[in-house]
Image (tube, rainbow, N blue to C red; front, top):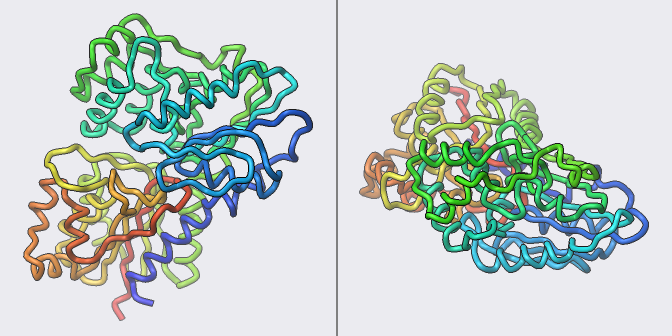
Length: 412
């Protein structure tokens, strides 16, 4: 097995462990008696719904997932919408989902299936704010380089469904929220902007974050935040019948990849499952770690990196990390790496990420491509497409965030 093949097998294993069809059943209780409603949102939510029906049989409900991520369900309706910028399909589906929760009683049971991507897919702007205004703000925030936690904190303030509001709408029904974490630190309040978790932020904090990341909001959004918003706090009595359970997380996928590495006699070094920061800066730091590592070392990390848009290229955090890492390593012998998003989508491209090796820069030179220029223009996906080193698994139907592996191969 070549280093490239081995790295791809590690990524495949990381995704497999987080597949709801492999992992959700252990967290699912017996189906309650009485009325049961299944709702959800996220890139993995349709696969989660499929896994629920494999255990419980056909169920009533509605789940919103990303375009191309639908799964066949017998009773639960699957609706596709846009990610990472919300669209009208997501807004219409969210309104229908909220209507299903209207009029529930304390004898009813709601199963909420929440995964990464739900922030964009659950789209119900707060009073006085339009979808177009939220779309413009989302695009500006994604281009600003702001960490996803900051972005989602702002989203919570401007939503009629995030920050605990979805759970509040289901009260007095009992709710169990099963979650796949895609956020550094695995805070339930950060996954899909916490639709079933009380909000601990504030409108003032959101305004400060917008100022910090130099994003000017539309007048209606600024006015809404200036007025203090409409928060659902953790002690809101409408959240008293909610249980939030994270049943799959990045740490499990990294552990599974580590097991594969150890089985091939590699010394595994885990840098953590919650790394954040500018992709190119983290790559430079990791290049130094790789240069100092002994042959036969496998370096693993997860988390969620960011990219500050400086150019007009086609890229994403994982591809930009891989390109910056290749430049920093400058053809160092025996060092290979992979950086991919476990949902199969890096940035806005239908590409999970890329692989690099000692010959990456030589391939680029032969193809007439300047790596430094590609990095400057945030054009990492085009760079790796040209040298045929992209990783394109298609929809993975799960999402436990970034997966990075650096292989310092044995010298023999």
